[in-house]
Length: 209
Ligand SMILES: Cc1cc2nc3c(=O)[nH]c(=O)nc-3n(C[C@H](O)[C@H](O)[C@H](O)COP(=O)(O)O)c2cc1C
Image 1 (tube, helix red, strand yellow):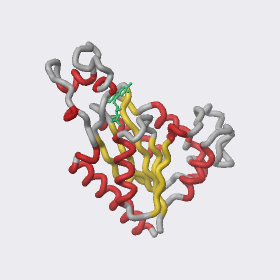
Image 2 (cartoon, helix red, strand yellow):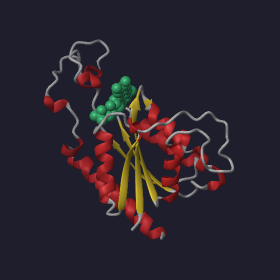
Image 3 (cartoon, helix red, strand yellow):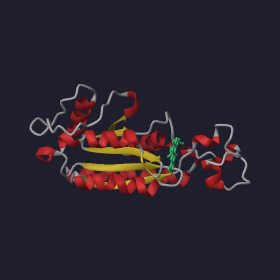
Image 4 (cartoon, helix red, strand yellow):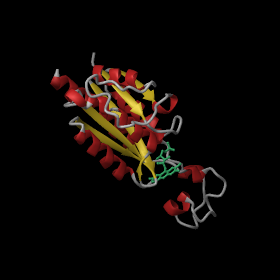
């Protein structure tokens, strides 16, 4: 059986990105694991390039175990979301920390797919991830863009605050009801796209074997 590892860079516990990633991974029908990066200890890349010969990072944190998992995997899935119009920080830190595997072309041709979550900026997130995959010479199999929820839906001031993402999305007169929340499992079309992406990942892996 092939092995596919997902890395969620979402900091929202059991949020949309995690749910969509689970659906994709399940749909591969292969052995899979979903790693929640926010549960781990991950420092920032210092750019020391101490990894050039070893393909492992000199920093003492959880990244080297993840690098081993990436090397062993037949394919990986990376999930991120939008913050201030761009890819969120944790996901960015993780993809920078994949740098040790860039040397000696370890990442070259590695199958990768992405999940891009957001209220407005999923497309930008998807493109940012895609450009990193290209830089790393990975083989991108596909990407899933999905909706998300803003903290403003729940803070208590979402209908009145001048900075409300809820008002930006639904207009100044809209009311916050349970219907405004984006729930991945209820978005049949998104679940279907996630399922198709999972199957596509499995198919591309089987063609490579
Ligand atoms: C501080 C902050 C900034 C955000 N900025 C954006 C943004 O610029 N564009 C956007 O599409 N979504 C933005 N979001 C929404 C997140 O992308 C959203 O949390 C994500 O889609 C995940 O959805 P979930 O929280 O339901 O899992 C922001 C959320 C927070 C907390």
